[in-house]
Every structure is written in C-alpha cells, then in structure tokens.
Image (cartoon, rainbow, N blue to C red):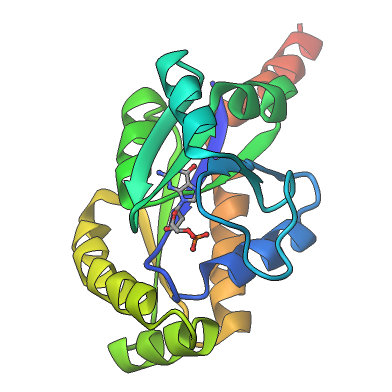
Length: 201
Ligand code: 5GP
C-alpha cells in the first residue's frame, strides 16, 4: 500500500503556499517533483519546484511510459514520473502530489487508497485578485487560467475532502488534521498492532 496524498485546486487558490507550509510542518512528507514543459517562474528552481524539460524530452518520456500520469494543463504538459513515485514513496514514506483534476483522477484509479484533497478559494473575486497579482504581465494566460478554474471547480465531487483557503493558518490546520487522520487509518497501522498481538502470545 502506497501512502499518497493528492492535492488539487484551481490556479490562484493558494495551493502552493499551503503545500509548502504543510511540508514544513511534516518534514517526513515527500513532495513529488513533477516534470513540466512550462518555463520556470521567477524564484522557481529546477529539480525542486519542477523538473523543467523541453516539449521533445517530455514527449520521449511519454512514449517510454515513464509517467504514472500526465496531462495538458493551460496549454503546457505536466507529469508525475514513475521514478518520483517509486523513489520518494519507498519504505512507506508519504508522497504529496500537487496535480490537476485530470491527474488526480488518474492517480485515484491506479491507487484507490490515495487521499485526495481539493483546495478552493473563498470567492471568485479572491481568485481573480490572486491571479492578477501573480501574472500582471501575462494577461492572456491569467484569463485562460481563470476560465480553467471554473471548469476545474466542477470536479470537486471526485475528491475525498474540500478545504476552503480563506485564511492560510486555518486552511493549513485543516490540512494537517487530514494528514494525521490519513496516517492513523487502520490499514496503515497494521504492523504496529500485529507486533503488539505477537508480544501477547
Ligand atoms: P503551475 O503552472 O501553476 O505550477 O501548475 C498548473 C497546474 O498544473 C496546477 O493545477 C498543478 O496542480 C498542475 N500540475 C503540476 N504538476 C502536475 C503533474 O505532474 N500532473 C498533473 N496532471 N498536473 C500537474
């Protein structure tokens, strides 16, 4: 059983900040670094935020079956490689995937035991404001992302949990609770209880 937590949410819902804070709270969590054909944003580092690759390299990886899932999002390609899944979730470690709704669906099909969380903004006005702040020079892309956000929101029913990211601290507290609950699920604690039972013989 792999420990996989999928986190999705429309662009501008504050998901990346939330995930960064979650990883700081639980250093034992492993972040799955996706491959993407989109160029890096200021401050993003190759190999940490994403593996930034050319469209040709991405295509070769698709053909070679190296992705557990991949999708086209806002005209660029994004994918979770098998090597990320295998290496970072080895030894029972918990892997956190920041992926879109198509990717989440794919992962849930392959790993039904994964926990999926959908992060939503408190309002569309807040979403618009966050997108504008981030991409004042990329008007066309920001508009495209806003249109996509409305479409993505409709996928909320496929997720196990929904978190409204109004106030970061409150959203983070909710997410931390979910992570603890996930780790306390009975099948994940089988070995610990079996050990107790063996000791009682
Ligand atoms: P951004 O360009 O803002 O970093 O990400 C755009 C969207 O792509 C986000 O919704 C993010 O969750 C999604 N994304 C990032 N990596 C992956 C991936 O490996 N697979 C899929 N399906 N979506 C991804």
